[in-house]
Amino acid sequence: MSLHDPLPAAPNCGDCPIRYTAVCARCDVDELAQLDAMKFYRSFEAGQTLIWSGDRMDFVASVVTGVATLTQVMEDGRTQTVGLLFPSDFVGRPGRDTAPYNVIATTDLLMCCFRKKPFEELMERTPNVSHRLLEMTLDELDAAREWMLLLGRKTAREKIASLLVIVARRDASLHLHAPRGRIVFELPLTREAMADYLGLTLETVSRQISALKRDGVIELEGKRHVTVPVFDRLLEEAGDDDDGGFVG
Amino acid sequence: MSLHDPLPAAPNCGDCPIRYTAVCARCDVDELAQLDAMKFYRSFEAGQTLIWSGDRMDFVASVVTGVATLTQVMEDGRTQTVGLLFPSDFVGRPGRDTAPYNVIATTDLLMCCFRKKPFEELMERTPNVSHRLLEMTLDELDAAREWMLLLGRKTAREKIASLLVIVARRDASLHLHAPRGRIVFELPLTREAMADYLGLTLETVSRQISALKRDGVIELEGKRHVTVPVFDRLLEEAGDDDDGGFVG
DNA sequence: CGAGTGGTTGACACAACTCAAACGATGTGG
DNA sequence: CCACATCGTTTGAGTTGTGTCAACCACTCG
Image (cartoon, rainbow over all chains, first blue to last red; front, side):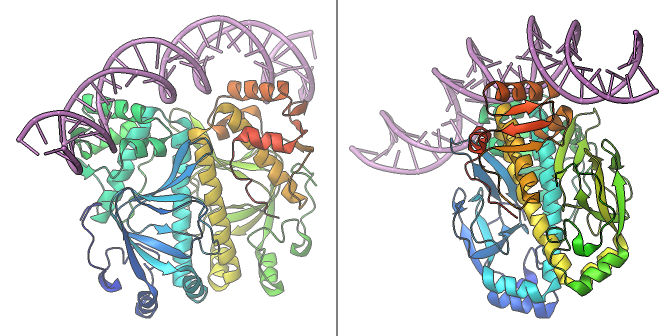
């Protein structure tokens, strides 16, 4: 399975690909049955905007397959992506009713949705959900702060390498292993979407990817299919001091 | 009361300045008594590092008075501040035992601490605490994402203006009102700490502050005492499209 | 009074941005 | 089936905002 797989038929919770990683990860059979009863699926095509900043949000959701971005746009059009959503990531905030960001599908996307009100009520009586959500939110906060270091202090080349590391890790985690040695993955983002996430222009992104290719850090087939011959080399280029523990 | 006030004698929870804004905000008298029994205070001087990244953390804490920063440092010394902690903000993550960031007091600081284990146990049986912590963590995530926009897309001048807006807002929230018209506050950060938070060099910070002064957006007495004659003007300079609703 | 700390200002360099041209892949209509 | 438009991308040439290096100022402390 990769980030781009065709959408599976709406799965039963029991054999859902994100059963043990999403908000529902710690639910018992009874709790799962309750979620199962209230869930509904929505699918989107690559490029579609699911939610506009300022919209009323009457549901929360988990990404089942595909990738989406959270982006902020300034009045004059400057755009910054503030979150990448991979399978199992959660969208929406209990207790808030308007969306603070645009949510955009960058690949075909399947979401598992819950109407907000019933979900909030379930959260009230189900610590297994609210504690898992707290844990996931704390993880996202850590990720956001790591991204602040990237945006504030890394060079364009380090930024690109760091993004590739993130994508490689999230892709690997779908297969339940850590990236090591020679790895291959698909980029779920256009050059422009990468630029918006990295705080760069798309030209700079393109140039730095070309440079990493020229230097043998990566190989490309087409624009999206990336091979990293030596993952540790990519890690060095990313300039991270730690290796960011693997979460299965 | 300002961000810099001398430390009060260790207060009783009932008349603690952050009684209705910290993790304990929603606790009833009984829950408060439990927290009261297990809490202890620690104070720090401006400039002190409370916690080093990688250290074992056996407590969590709330800022009672003063300001602290969370900072990340790369191997080569590049430094990025990833969080500003004002009174009522929470430090430490239940369920993790080593600190991911340096925590540094930028003013004299009073912390209300809880040993991690007992606090976690109390959280298990006290939804009023864990729900409040979830809410605060979601707020912090929003703040981190707003900062990502700043780091990725704003100019140096906009960055400075934005920081001043944040400090003005947090300072005002201690007095339970929103900033408006002519306002006055103390900067709780050195130029270097500002640079680390804004992803700039201290020279650029200094130049842009001089420029804002020259243009009449701010007035300075000494290096730290700031007067903003027209708060809306500062907001324009910050380049934010929304006015970031007031939280009392 | 000298040393140290935090801040300001200047001169210059360079990484990344802007503007512009062109490419390959894909799709569409005559 | 070819001409043509579009989209995402690459590459080049020139500009600029911010970083770097360095001198100097204002205070404070011992």
